Image (cartoon, rainbow, N blue to C red):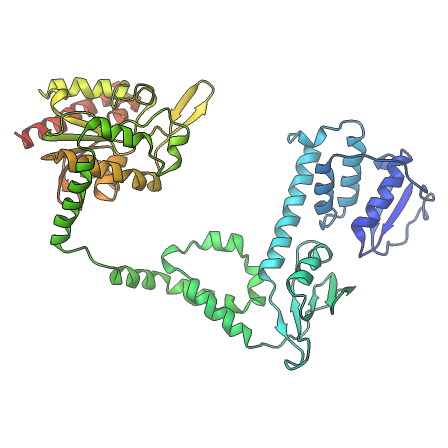
Length: 473
């Protein structure tokens, strides 16, 4: 049995030296006992003398990166775990790529914890001035309580960032001093650190960037756990700011700019009319749409899908986005939802060639699943980017009524999709005054698993389209 004692500092380098010698001598993991710092007295003595010298040991680069993190973990078995992986890699070079192997999974989890701990130290450590502010090099000190033994590998970050001042970082495990070079000393209890003028600056900055309208307490505590609050000057403000967040958010909303005056709608219509003149030809509109790069959806779609129909149509139907068939053919509403749409139009006596049919988003958004392309709903940003094209179409057609089919169309036209089923059948308005009738998208009906529900919803959809027909005479 071999007994290996590693020093408190220089731990990783010492482990590599010992591991290289042991692996070269063919010593199996179960024949090694690892100690960190001064080991306790062992009933079985000091063990066999360690092998001297080492042959060439090659490992994947991924192992070196992994070991350089895991060796600083607090798990007492960390040295044995990394050596066991080194031993296994001599027989299976591709082992690290097997994420299902429990040994690999455990080491990756430990590396992630160490990486997160190092990030927390660089983000949440706060220096306080402890020396003479008039000295040539000012002196600072800080206290931190890491979860793992990360002080030594993280110290060079602070030496580079704060190389123009002297400082000390105290932790329960290790102390590091810097006066132009790094020196390490044993850990100690938290020393009495005075407050300084920079703390008020931290508080002022933190108060100024706090947005009460976007408070997410759980997310904040996940990124900045409570254990660090007591050593951060700005954290003392958090309870009060959280308590007043609701009131401040309501005050911000009340102070927000009001709706533009009625004359702004006339100006907006004039702007849209001027833009529409540029695309008086539908062919010109399609050519311009082909070059759209306003959002990333164009990268995977086959082509954009423009609306179609007469430019003097009294009725405009706006759907969500092209589907798989629409993306391939370049025409709106030709897939299963389009076929249902056509049937219902015919039922209520609307000739599709007399109405303008388009989508709020012009490119197909999907997720590949083998040979299939599964529909994905556009997000708010994509809807907003494509609204420019829909507004142009509205300006060119200037319909008497727009039928918003589904949440995406409703959001693009009115600003919100909330409560679409409650709003269904109602007549609303776009910000510039066009009338909008709210209904569901035909694909919503097709997705219903119950045939009875499908029939009921189809009847309601037919009633909504008949209401649209009657509204425009």
